[in-house]
Structure formats: structure tokens, C-alpha cells
Length: 91
Image 1 (cartoon, rainbow, N blue to C red):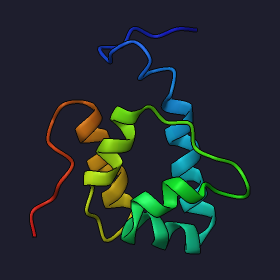
Image 2 (tube, rainbow, N blue to C red; image 1 turned 180 degrees about the vertical axis):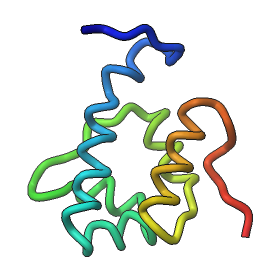
Image 3 (tube, rainbow, N blue to C red; image 1 turned 60 degrees about the horizontal axis):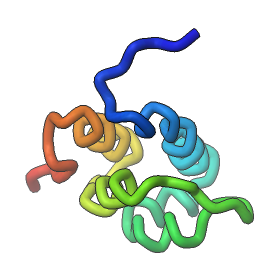
Image 4 (cartoon, rainbow, N blue to C red; image 1 turned 90 degrees about the horizontal axis):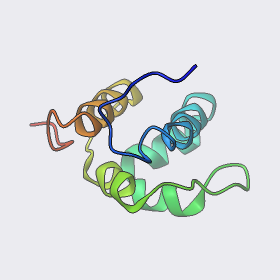
């Protein structure tokens, strides 16, 4: 079933890749730490031998996130994708 979305074409399609990224961080503490401390390296390295096929716009969002927990990371990612912030959290 297709649900209407206010996301630009392509963003909805790639939500599966974002789910893969978050899932990898959930199941692997080492990958989670890497995603939180060096998201560029985490994206480049992929997980379990597989790359993340994210559009440049979503990669850019991920690279702006500064989070200390996966929960905070996911929250900022959701806010940025929905246009409710720039992905950064004040310190």
C-alpha cells in the first residue's frame, strides 16, 4: 500500500536505505559508535560488506548530525528530513 508523502520524489524510495543504516547501528555497537563519531567514514565503510546507497542530499543531512546517542541521531535525522531543523543539536 502506498501512503501519500510530502517528501520529494525519491526520498520515500530511499527510506529503506536509511532504515538499513539505523538497523546496522542498532545491531552493531562498533558501527553505531562510528556513525556517531565519524559519519562520513561510517557511510564510506558501509556495513557487513554492503554499501549504503543514499542520495547526496541524505548523505549531507547525515554529515550535519551531531549526536551522542542513536536515539538522538534518529530524532535529528527525522527532523532534518521533514524540514524541521538543520540536523544540528545545540550543545
